[in-house]
Length: 168
Image 1 (spheres, one colour):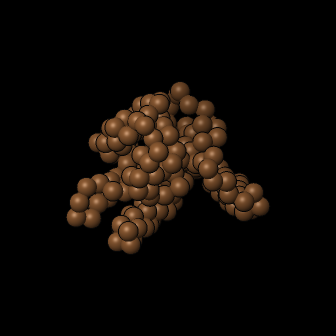
Image 2 (cartoon, helix red, strand yellow):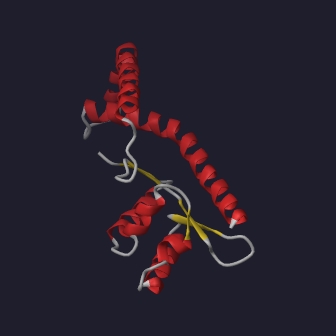
Image 3 (cartoon, rainbow, N blue to C red):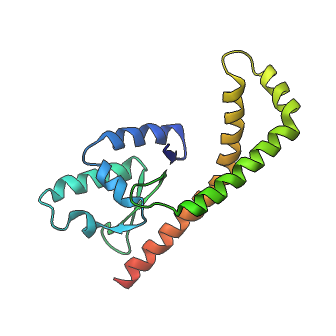
């Protein structure tokens, strides 16, 4: 399963287009680890113009931010999160511990709130199953929780980018 965190449906659409683009996809993959200077993308490549054009496209589509200090664009930062990344794999023991905690909390919540969930489900109308409705409750709760973490990650990326540029 892959989880993509973007700010809106509009950004989701732009991300899907970019991810399908053979010039943009490798850039998106590299940026998953954090801010990167332009030289990482273009050094040693014969298609520097193509890469710069892809970066410009990603910035224009608000999928990537460009950071500069008194000059041309020098550093790029992802404006989304994609997990799991094939580049980074979290330690399985930590993932399993947290996953078990999530499952316990969700199970406990559903036991305590089952009648409220069922009542809410019955008022939402046809066209959705109870399982999908329950998933949507969990997903919306996760979204609220994850927004803060995502915001902090984006701020960290930009802070690191500024430090990289200052330290050139």
